[in-house]
Amino acid sequence: MSRSFITVNTVRRMYSYIKDCEAEKRLDSLNDLAQSERKELRPYFKLISVKFDSETRITKLEFCQIHYYRTIDRYVTRNYVRYPIYSSWKVKSKNIKKSIKLTNAELEKLNQNEDELIRDFADYIIAELPSDDFYPSWFLSDTYNKYCELRIKAHKDELNGVAKDVKEQIDDYDELIEKREEERTNLLRLSLKIEKKSGKLNNKIIKTKNAKRSLFLSVISFGIYAYYISASRLERLNNTLLRCQNDLFDIKERIDKLEADNRKDNENINAALKTYEDKKNEIEARIKKEQNKLDNMLSHIDSLTDEYREDDEFILLKEFAGFSYKNIIGCYVIHNKENDKYYVGQSKDVMKRLRQHFRGTVPNNVIFAEDYFSSDYENKENLFEVKIIPCETKDELDRMERELIEKYDSRNYGYNRTIGNS
Image (cartoon, rainbow, N blue to C red):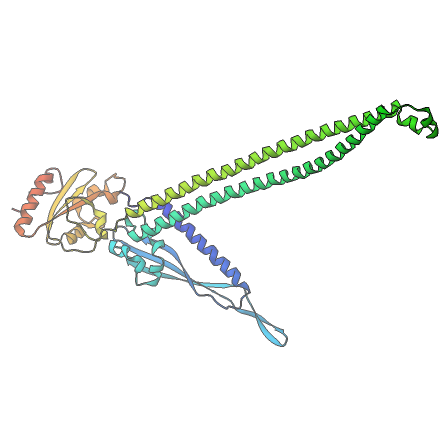
């Protein structure tokens, strides 16, 4: 059963992303130092390869030490003082090879290894292992936290993207509203002028209509009074008043449209803000879910088993490669999961005997070799499983061996050739 809540490929992609981010920061740091007078930088290391043998747990590591330095190209003199002009950054490197046996106990303390290189790259080393069966508890804890941080950062980046889009929309709407308000203010001012002019025209029309016809006034005003009360002037005043009223009507329609457009854009702003709030609530719920998931993950982390536990369960043969050596006197049962065949044996040192039968998960013994090499099992590392029954005396060993051979019928349908010691 998988020990991890995230896949090996996801773990590798995540640590690859983290490695790329660190490389980018390092490059930025180099660019920042381009104008400085530093001649060299402290060497840094990269993990080049991890070759892990799951059968023996022997792991070959290769690192690269990288050293950036600069040389003086020339000197320049300013105010009688010589200043060096440095070259661009140069690099030299060398590879470093190391080997370590990653038993379960070693994996659980790899981040505290006495070798500084292995200790510093412990998480990257484990990220390269082929299965989450080899992930120690501290790595799972660190990885889940990093994974959760990256997921939460992605959610927050998504929210920031939505906030940016909404802000741009609102800014656009605000700009349109502001322009319409400016236009509306100008139209209201124009409307007031026209209304004032209409009032004056209306007064003139009333006065013209109420004026008495007087030949005397017409004569002494040289016809001006006659023009003042004439029908043609009255018609022109009425026409001008009508144009003013039409202009007021047009202005009112334009103002009404501007106000309607502004109401619509204010509604659009409110809708955009609601979209943001809804997205914010959704993303906050997602972040909370991620945090709850992380808490659940952390609460279910178990340390890798360091030694065989004396119980009634079969365990995969491959797990023994990760156990610390322990001298167990007892009987053992080897089970082929593909064809359901069993082998029962006894030994004063079961762990040593199993290593005589198998090199990791590959048989050294002809008893199992034929079935192993002809097997179509999906993953041969999981083909054999083992159970150990501790015993104390020779009589108990012999009796238990006979009982187990009979229980699993391993003489007739298994790998045993006898019924056990008599």
